[in-house]
Length: 202
Image (spheres, rainbow, N blue to C red):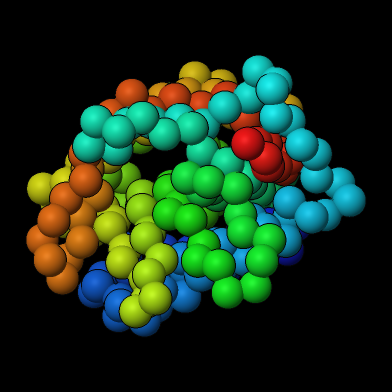
């Protein structure tokens, strides 16, 4: 039975990786909920602005270098294990004015219910409950790119993971199934504290 201590990120579990592909609406909910959770955590009294610190989350998207903002590492599980982890952030600080579009976001997560996510290499599609997502908000809705096809491999290398934080690298490809367009993610690297928001301002 899953521990209730797994935080609110747990509702984002990637059920579409178990069996049939879920509906586009379900993915939109995941992206929207991630955005809401990251922002709500950033305004939490326990959150901290680690701008200018040694913490970072960055990557190149089709050759365009991005340092992400409002980045958060969350995870949890039974018996102090990491049965679930999620890392995500935005390309720009989250908007403070009503009506402003949410910046594009990148996140990845792994589920190993009953297991323990430790330092090591994890890749789609061989990791059955792992997903990476890139989402672009537009006035007409959300454009989602994800690792839902066997041809699009996304690799995460965790160098260290604990309740102090997580460090590692990532690379791979995410694809929009409607258009077939893929985004190549390279030079991904991160060093993040546990449950603290970093890079909240430019």
